[in-house]
Length: 55
Image 1 (spheres, rainbow, N blue to C red):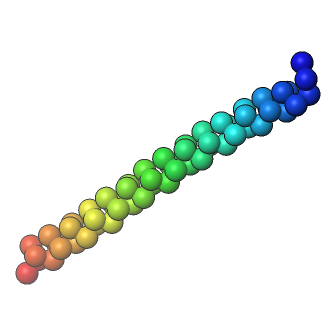
Image 2 (cartoon, rainbow, N blue to C red):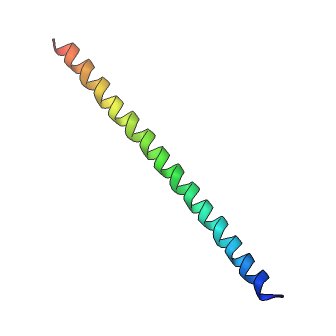
Image 3 (tube, one colour):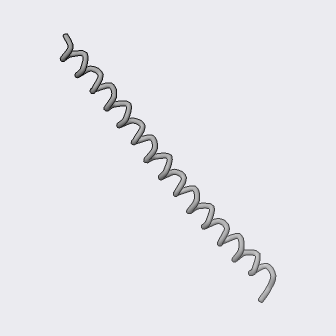
């Protein structure tokens, strides 16, 4: 097996691994942002409902 092919295979594996890690990171970040958004939205709506009911 030529060395260049070995190196190519190694970089290919590393690249796919990196892509996978980046994708997982993006998904995690996205879900976190969505959760954060929903959380803040929930607090804001709860707060406004609370203020309306107290008046």
